[in-house]
Amino acid sequence: MADPAQFSVQLRLLDGYKFEIDFGDAGQLFSDEPAPLGEGTGPNPSRLLAAAVANCLAASLLFSVRKFKEDPGPVTAEVRGELERQDGRLRISKLQVDLQLGHNAVEIPHLERALSQFENFCVVTQSVRQGIEVSVQVLDSDGQLVHQG
Image 1: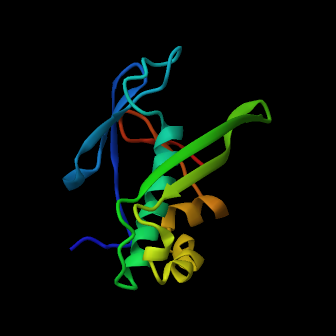
Image 2 (image 1 turned 45 degrees about the vertical axis):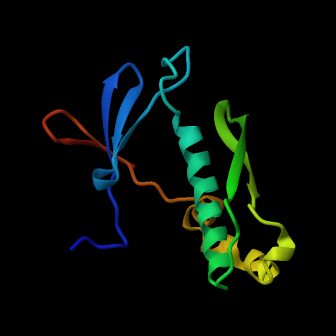
Image 3 (image 1 turned 30 degrees about the vertical axis):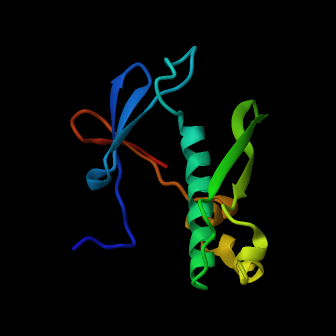
């Protein structure tokens, strides 16, 4: 049985900057950089990160409302990101996530309590807010470690 505290995602370069991202049993999707680097045939990593944050927040909101056996209706989300140069390199400087409930607030008696806690349930958003330790290894075609950082 797999350890639920660990996960793995596989990426494979297809062409240019287009990657197939394999989530195993959950399926695949394609990412690509916009022109002039890539062809824009899929979301780029910045958009995938933004989507992950918004999706996690939407799911956390659903969870928080449903904990009280209430129905938030069909929740939607929009996320807008801002890029800025930091030390000469583009970085995501801000993500603005707008969530919309499918029902009026008065129809959700415990909404205030749900709203006070839902962000804390979002693994992705809380991780991004705190910063993520990233370890990097580079292997050559023979599997030899050429870089570790």
